[in-house]
Length: 267
Figure 1 (tube, one colour):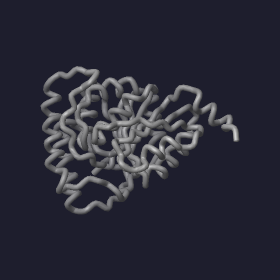
Figure 2: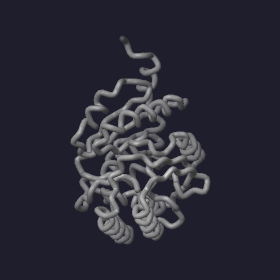
Figure 3: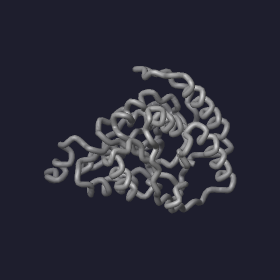
């Protein structure tokens, strides 16, 4: 059967928006997430595309992307051998070329209606738009344990020291001016969980306001974050970010990454 004319049109024009999805062993959740994302983007009145970053998965994650049906919204695979969500998002952002870019988690915990709001703000001149579960207009369905809630509270308190005024650095839904995102991604050195903090701090360093928006967010099963296993590593990452922000850095063609911490998901 020949490709549909709509699919040809959607794949032949440069995308206005590219969305990165980091994926580590996501064969169970990725197909459903891609279906949701592609359906959402196909309804937008301009070309879009999706980049899935396979973060050294040992399951069928990469195969799912390679064999994804061709359609109106192109889905492309990028490989990232360095463990950690931060490394994966960095690789994905550096693989974009669109005027506007974003990233979200494979589980699509954030309702994709927020894409319209984020893009509208970017088109109006905002350069950083992020989903915030702490926004008073957000609706959050949370099933986290009390221990994990306390850990998240402590993390937010530390993150606010580095990114003042931002209530939720870790919601996996962030959109940017594309040129700025690529410039900042080249400078990122945090491969693990706390990479969002460095990313947003670098944006603020560039003079970009971080605009938080309300989202509908639902806690999804399958998170790899464990307070017992990851708390020390996260505090260490935040300390490194604090030190790094005090010393001007320059992008390097082959940056010396710090020893990767365990790859974990959103809190």
